[in-house]
Image 1 (cartoon, rainbow, N blue to C red):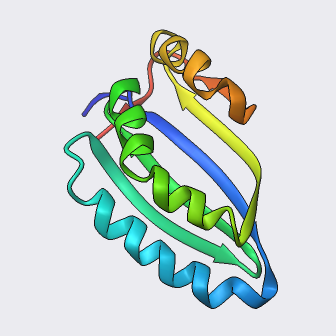
Image 2 (cartoon, rainbow, N blue to C red):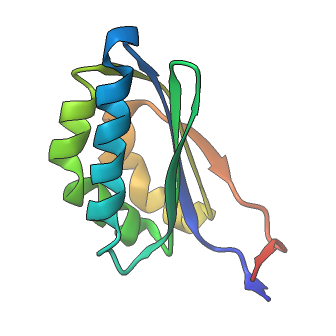
Length: 120
């Protein structure tokens, strides 16, 4: 096992009821486009009614920012049929410091990892 130092982005979207099927189809495009990212550790969408959540993790802040650049057009498309109502960013203090300015406009809630965690 190794120390858990990854950065996770935790967005929640409220999808318009009449756009749910279209949004779900778009998530498949997000997943396919993200597969090429070398710094992505995991990436998937889950749903609870009209709430969509993207479960995503990256090796570091640079990889997270590269992902946002890679899916920027798709994200803008998703926001035409949904509202981003909650955004969390999790990571070590040093990695979060690299994300605070670039993500400030999204008004995320910041979660600092405590030392001692692990992942396989």
